[in-house]
Length: 148
Image 1: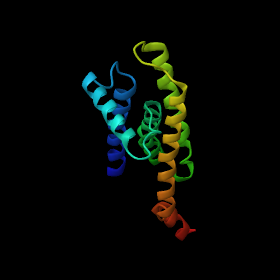
Image 2 (image 1 turned 180 degrees about the vertical axis):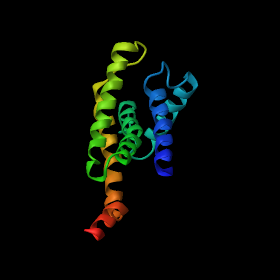
Image 3 (image 1 turned 135 degrees about the horizontal axis):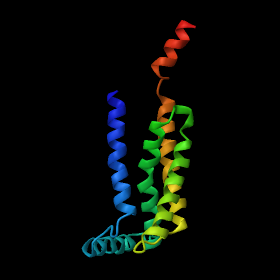
Image 4 (image 1 turned 60 degrees about the vertical axis):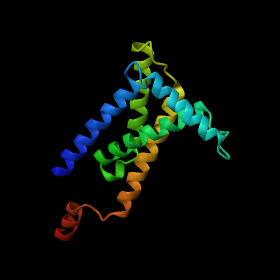
């Protein structure tokens, strides 16, 4: 029971993060935006950093933002349905982009976000699926096997 409550709390907290990052007027203040651009400029000066453009950084950030979505969704699903968590991430992302396009004129809807968010969800779900495959089967299944 504690595990489900903890998972519910994590889900609610990360849902707030996703809402804050995707469905509010401004994610970053002007000062924070300047900080991001300064960090990006610094990273581009590093050896091999010239490939790191703003668009690529945004794409990678969208992947990273949805890794926890895939992981959390996979934890809610039964072990063998872990891949469904990636589908949930894509559906959630498509819904966010649709809301941005239709309801939020100050936000920019981009189909590439659905791709990057889906990739992040798939990565998170795959990580959970892999870790679960290394763990022993749930106790209920072991008890049923003994009694049969």
